[in-house]
Image (cartoon, rainbow, N blue to C red; front, side):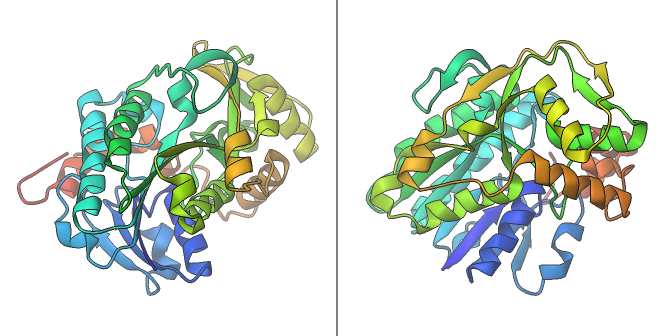
Amino acid sequence: MKVLVTGGAGYIGSTLVRSLLKKNYEVRVLDRFFFGTESLKDIEQQIEIVKDDVRWVDPSIMQGIDVIIDMAAISNDPAGELDQSKTLEINHLGRVRIAQLGKKYGVKKYILASSCSVYGFQEGLLDEQSDKNPLTTYAKANILWENDVLPLADKNFCVTVLRQATVYGLSPRTRFDLAINGMILGFFKTGKIPLLRDGNQWRPFVHVKDTSKAFISVIEAPSEIINGQIFNVGSNDQNYQIFALAELIAKSLQIPFNYEWYGSTDNRSYQVNFDKIKTVLKFQPDYTPKEASLELFDALQNAKINPDDKRTKTVEWYKHLIESDALIQSIKMNNRIL
């Protein structure tokens, strides 16, 4: 079976591709490589790589593909605000195009990599039927994408939405602009855990290897139980308030709980119910923030990751590319630019 992973060189994608290879899937990666190619260097001989864009890649990309896992995107809330129109163009319209091409050219399954950020700010434990309350362009694009792609589902084209919790953990392209990972980096560099005000906000979490496992669970599930379905990806016991999470990380690392506040009060807060994916797909996470904290901190201590690499922070890297004009130069293609 051959799987197309858009955004396959990214934080989640580069982990997922390795998980797919371990399961003996053939893999084709579509990526713009704004963050470089290093995340795939050790496996590039085992996969097919296409450097292109979801908005205009040639339809021949679908040749021989059985499953699409679509995660190419401007990848978080702050980055999505740098250019709202381009975020919508890529995260919504570009990915809808990939779904439409997949259906047209006979792909059997399309898996949409959405986010629990669509819940925004709400009280209570939210399930897949709960109201959505998108507070950012990134979250709005995910909802538009879901709304346009789910109706494509039919007996020949299985569509499934995975709304992922906030991801954490070590990856071939680790990011430090995510809550848990950022706390670890902050302590490593300053001796204090950075906390986004006011610490009372709720957020669900899932390890990068666990969310990769969820995508494979969908590939392997019978279409009749997943077609047209939405699944929150995570676990009920990994809903945390940010301040309590920081305390847990300090305890995991066996360090004094020293912290410092930053930013304005976060207006995103939500707890998520993950019973559906547990019941239907028998999904259970293998990792917790404790193991991830130890692994990330060890990687920093042993120089496996450069703590000053701008590419580990999405907004910082995009700004660097824009300011150096490297972004414009790197994305010119057939007289089209980002």
